[in-house]
Length: 135
Image 1 (cartoon, helix red, strand yellow):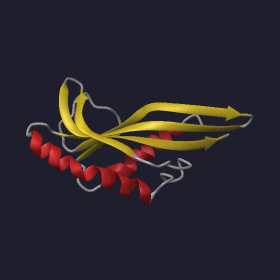
Image 2 (tube, one colour):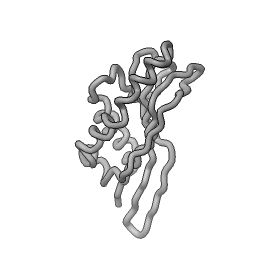
Image 3 (cartoon, one colour):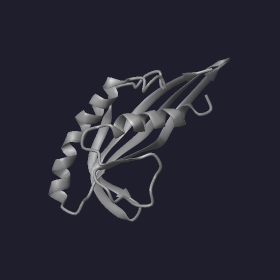
C-alpha cells in the first residue's frame, strides 16, 4: 500500500499519454514546457481513512494539459477537445489496470490560463479523484 498513490498516478499517466493529439506526457515535472500539447499529473489533495486492518484513500490528482499561448485564440480553440478525450480515456479503464478501486464521477475541469514555472500557457486542468483500497 505504501506505493499505491504513486502506482495509480503512473497508471493514470500511461492511460492519458495514449490519447490522440498529445505530443508529450511527462512522468516527472520538467523544468519548463516546450512541446505542445503536453500533459502532467500530480497528487493535489487526499483523504485517508483507516480502521483495523482496512484502509481507504480518496486522492484528487491534478491533471493539466498545456497548449502554447503564443497564439491565444488558437490555444483556446485547440483545448476544447480535452474534456471528452480525457473522460473517454478514463471510462475505458476505470480501475487503471487494477491500481485503483474506482474513479468516482463526476470529472471536473476548467479551461484557463495555466502557469508553469515563469510562463503562462493555456489549457485544461482536471481534478481526477482516485479511490484506493488496501490493507
